[in-house]
Image (cartoon, rainbow, N blue to C red; front, side, top):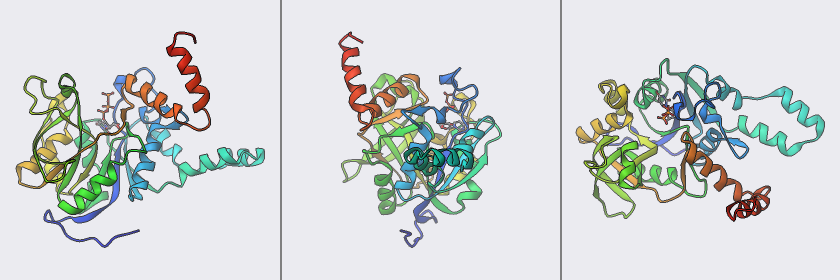
Length: 305
Ligand code: UTP
């Protein structure tokens, strides 16, 4: 259902329709697997991680999708395209289940692509979406950050953005020693238990000086004013243009930025350990292979497999 856009304080429309999915990163943490295969296409059971993310965007009511891709990522466009030869072969074999799975990936939404010539950071990747997004509020979903479909985060963020305007980030409480891997938010409480007003942000802080243990994770609903902020953002941590620094500039200008605290299941599939957890977690709950896998896993944990 399309809702009538209404202007917000930041001059944007209040209802997001477009999702931007950056997938141009180098995936160095997963080498050598990601030398020729985009990390976003690594399978979680039998679907690429990225397909779960596209499905999440569509489910949340964002049918317009822009992938920010780069060199060596051509297989991503192929995955979401039609495959007439494969479809014909499956049809001939009468393999209807696989045929519909293959077709489903190409029918998910209106998919667009733009290239990020050099992997100069997440903020730089988002900046490549400026002309596609225009003056609308939009969502960003990181292509390797998998949120379990049973835990609704993006829907809640879109809801908070509609009611409060401005931009919304997703926050996850992490152990203090891990905060240096993330953007970290300084916050002030609101009358809603899961919503915080963001008062400052810092990228990858030292645990000793981090202002909180609230980490920014890979879902954002952003005002289009982020593009001006990013254009003025110099390279930060790691020499990259950080999205966190762009959002921090919005806070500095007095634009509302809120954080929704997420307490569900989330996996960074670009991280080897988290990737394995995602595969196991989703596999044990599958109707087809779940019971047998769970059985094997129980034996394995007991030392018998
Ligand atoms: P990451 O920081 O996890 O990606 O970015 P990375 O740089 O590929 O990771 P490592 O550390 O080398 O393993 C999160 C998302 O943002 C995209 C990535 O593709 C990933 O989906 N990204 C990152 C870009 O599109 N462009 C960039 O310049 C950086």
